[in-house]
Length: 393
Image 1 (tube, rainbow, N blue to C red):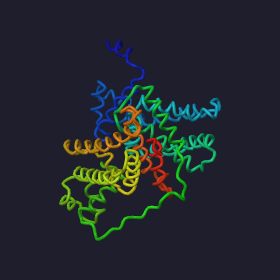
Image 2: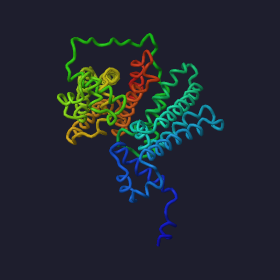
Image 3: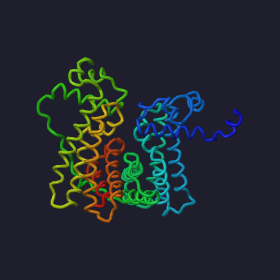
Image 4: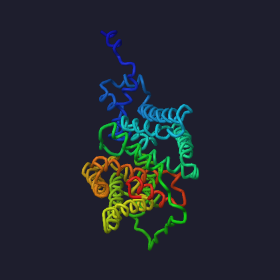
């Protein structure tokens, strides 16, 4: 009997186990999944899982690095000498779109859980990412030789975010159409005309009047630490030290780290809601959507809480708070979808939602990408990218 079982054991068992783990990591976040959870979901024992992977970090590395190898393979195939230069970018985008639609969990893990990889793996991915984007930029410059190399790089990062956007929502259409839509959006991004430095507006830092309260200081320091290290790698003692108080004193203001994250999430939501309210005071839907996109870019670049709050649903917090924050996020996205549907009535509702998520993901990703976020006119450029992808440039 044992020999019979062994004879039918699938040869790709390691890949199957990794796929099961990837879905769990995506649903619960890496820290929220244990080896036993993966084994139970895969229908195997813990020891059987350990025959393939040393620990769950090794599983994450296998999935993320494997997905990145697929990205590199698509790049090498599409940008090879055997493909006419005029067809290379479209071929590349087509392959990336297919991968994104068929393996949505890979994009999610790369975006949100990569910080849990060993430092050497993180450095290796960063190095290979730069090389891959350089290849894309070179191909784009063949199509648009008038672009400065730095602008081509920015547009390629934005195009990559279009494919990564499939990881932040569950909306779907027929696979072929889904991939086609992603290609159309990415091509639009790559063909964006960025504003010139003359037309870009410089930002004036807000005035700070008075000294923030101790609670505000704790909240600000927690936001900064969560952004730098991630929620699970920051202790209340770390937060207290950064705020200049003893760790236990933090509990006078917030009963737990989860309570801090809830406060950060609501702070971000309040600021977005206020910015949206101002933006929607427009004469028509197109102007409102135009202003809403600009308000989002401005808010995300000047509100650290917003970037941190994106991972609020992946941390330990009361289900009621988690559901409340998720409802607020969905309501905000619905405002965008409603406006886009009014401006682009030919766009089916699901495609409008996919388009909105692509626009928001570009803003979220590029705001966290130091390589491009340091550009002197970044806010105007990022706003232009969102206007382009929404079809309102």
